[in-house]
Structure formats: C-alpha cells, structure tokens
Image 1 (cartoon, rainbow, N blue to C red):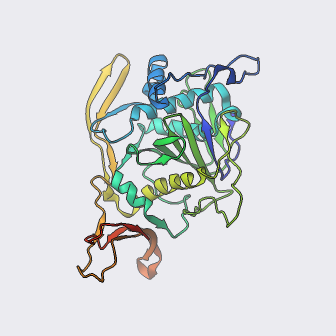
Image 2: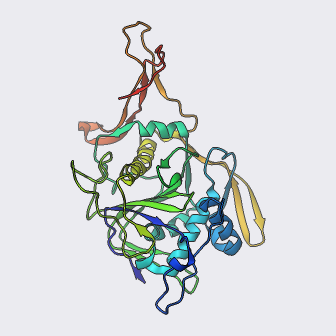
Amino acid sequence: MDEQKPLVSNSAKSNTIYKTPDAVPPDDQGRKKSTFLHIPAGFEAGKFVAKHLKEQQPKVFDTFYPKMYQDLADYHSPREVAGWLGWSALQFVNYGVEKSPSAVKLLTPALGGLVAKGMPTFFLDRNFLEALKRTDFKDEIDWTTMKLPYEEGIMILPRKAFIHPKDGEVSFIVWSRLKEGDYTFPFSKQPHAKVIHVKKETFAIVAMTGRDGVWYDSCLSTEFRPTLKLNNMFYLAKDDEIPPDNSTDSVFDEPLTEVDLPFVEQMGIIVFGTLLALLAKPTLLTKGEKGKTIVKGDTKREWWTPNIVGRGYQTRREPGDGSHASPRMHWRRGHFRDQAHGAGRALRKQIWLEPTLVNATGEDGEVATT
C-alpha cells in the first residue's frame, strides 16, 4: 500500500511529458521508464495524448470515457479529459507516490470515485463563467461541510474562456474532496494495483492547460486551511513572498512564479464559485439526458446530452434613467453571502447576488469595472 503524505495547502505546476527521451529518469534498476511521449510538431498535447492512449491503451482510455456527448462545439473535448486522466493513471503506476507529478498525486485518490460514478462532468456556460469572475467572496468558505453535487467531479470549460498567460487555455478542472482513509486505484484488478491512504481530509483542485500539457494544482487540508478565503487564496499579506510549491523531488514539477498566483486564484474562484452558485440556485444546472448506447466488442459507451451549468445565462442589467446626469455604464460586482434564516435565524443558506451591468443603456457604450 502506498501511503500519501499529508497534502499541504500550497500549489504547484507539473509538466506531464518530457521534451527529450534523455530527460526520463531511470528506475531503481537504472532502466528508463515508459512514460516518455514525443509530441509531433503541430499537435496540441491534449489531442495527441487522447489519440495515443486510445490506440495504445484502449481499455484505459475507455475507462475514463464511458459517455459521448452531443452539441459541444463551444467546449473542449471530453476525449482529452479521458486522455489526460488515463495518462496520469499510467504515470502513477510507473512512478508511485514519491516521484509522480504533484498533480498526479492529488488526482489519483479521486480516480476510483470518478470512474465509479460514471465520470460526473459539468460544462460551464461562457456567460455564467464571466459572471463568476465578477463575483466577490466575502465570507470564508468551510469546504469541509459545504454541500457538493459529487465529492469529485470534472468541469469542462468553453474554448478560450480561461487562459494562462504562458501555457495557454485551460481545457478542464478536476475537483475532489477526500476524507481520511483508503482509496482504490481504478485498475485494482491488475498486478500493479495501488491503494492510496490519505491521512488528512483534503480538497484538491487540478487544472490542465492542454496545449503543452501542464497541470496546475492547489490543495487544501484540515491541517492547514480548514476554511478557504477566496480573493486571497494563499493568505498572503502585503509584500509576502511567493509561498513554497507543493512539489517533492519529482522531475516533473516546477515552482510557481508570480504570474501563476492570480491564475491559481482564478482556478479556485471558478470551482468554488460554481459549487456555491449551484447551492444558491440549483436551477442553474441543466441535467444531461441519456440517449442510445453503442456496443463495440467489449466496450459499451452511452450517448448523453451534457450537464450544463448556467445554460443560456443572461447578464443582469439595470437601465439608467436616460438623463445626461446618469453615470456611464459600469459593472456592479456580485457576491456570495451566507444568509441567516429560519426560527431564531439559526439556519444558514447560500445566496448569490449576481453581478449587474448598471446603466446598460448608457450612450458612450463604455464598460468600467467596479
């Protein structure tokens, strides 16, 4: 049994592929591991990894791709999700806990739950995502007790909706809340089966930038951050140094830089913002419906319409009074609030005061952020 070290509250980024075969570290017997993958010129890493895994490890690919979806022209492909998660599983088999990329260590305990639940996947509407970016989080979030649709799940983003300044578009984000205990690897019937022991309750967020195959991750634990304060996810005071990264001695991991911190902060806002919005307004979720099932040999795959969060989301608008004295068009930022209600106001419920475009009929057409 591999024992997971207590996951710290820091963040990291990890390369998932090597640029040259010589960079591949040998195992204890001096042999090169089999996780080197050369990405041909002109290919995005995500598309190539999905293609390669489907051809070379079809059973692994099918494990993470049980459903096919309709009408996804605006979104990144679930095939790439299957490719990256399958590739991560193989990396873990080859490297184990200590030498795997930081993101893979965080993903692996959640893989069994994702597979068992049929890969719960949510597609985020573009306008809904923009509304989250204009929303503040005034209260600390108790992530240990908040209600979740699933303990682990996948959010697939629209194309060009969330971009790292260096590594390109984020195609998907995985979240997982794990209790202390043992978690079975999805390929537990194979000889190299692994059982991961998690010592502390954790909440992990892992995002993939699919162009070059770089993971970004952030992990909360009850030991370090039992509550989360978004808009200052690292709890930094003015002039504080960048926090230490979450990597170990893995050759895949790199330290975070200044440009990475606001990006990781946005990861948290997207994940927790979506989960809080679903708590406040469950009708934001349009649930997918099952269609036909296709069977080819030993493989069974279902057609589904996607689960979409915020489908057809419309920006709230507040018109001006038409006078020249009216202020120019601007945004009033939204925020989440834990509101008291019930007898003696002893109960709490989550509400979302959504961002609003004020004086939306302004003459100058200019939008200012407030």
